[in-house]
Amino acid sequence: MKNILVFGGSSKLAEETIKNVKGPNTKVMLAGSNLQKLNTVMNDLKTWNSDVEFFVYQINALEYDRHQQLFDETIKILGDLDTVLIAHGTLPDNEVVRKSQELTIKEFNINCLSVISLCTIAANYFESKKNGTIAVISSVAGERGRQSNYIYGSAKAGVSAYLQGLRNRMNEFGVNVITIKPGIVKTPMTTGMPDSPLFAKPEKVGKDIYNALVSKKDVLYTPTYWKLIMAIIKSIPEGIFKKLKL
Image (cartoon, rainbow, N blue to C red; front, side, top):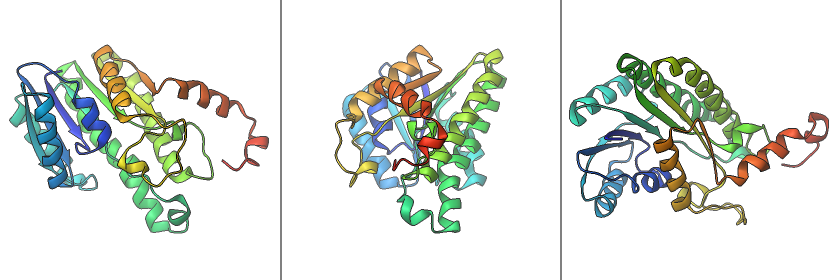
């Protein structure tokens, strides 16, 4: 990994992942909607990675007409592109969003459709190069629809299914597509959620994501115990599951 684009560059998981990137001649573009936060993260990362060059690019995930421009300008600035990490998203209040058609559509746009738009551009570029890595932070919430977060979860389910198909398509071109499925992590996104022993530290999850990028893993559950937890949840018969308050 020498030329990296991170969409959602100010997110905590993106920051903790990029902290692990080392090496001279490495360049990272941090893209996102909040320029102040991007600059704050960039300055923090510079203290961890003094030999890495960092750049920032302000763009909103829903500015679909600027997605191609982002890639074009990133490639121009970095000189090339070999890794794309998509780490943006929102965690909405399900009870509020489910009552609004407009808010529901907005959440799908942010958490699913904008990701697919970015991945489409990345995939076409890497296909022409015959190499590259696309990594996307999805969620274990997409493993099964639960009444407490089914809007967020179904958007993530769409992302995970899309990535599975994309991985199948891109395999013959030597392009790696990694689906990252974190559980609940102590980040600003989960502020206000009831505390739980299942909460993971972002440093741990970031390290896991970095290792998955290096090893070119197909699917990452992080922490790993979520793979077992979700296997159990998915095994519950629908007739029983629909009666549970999950």
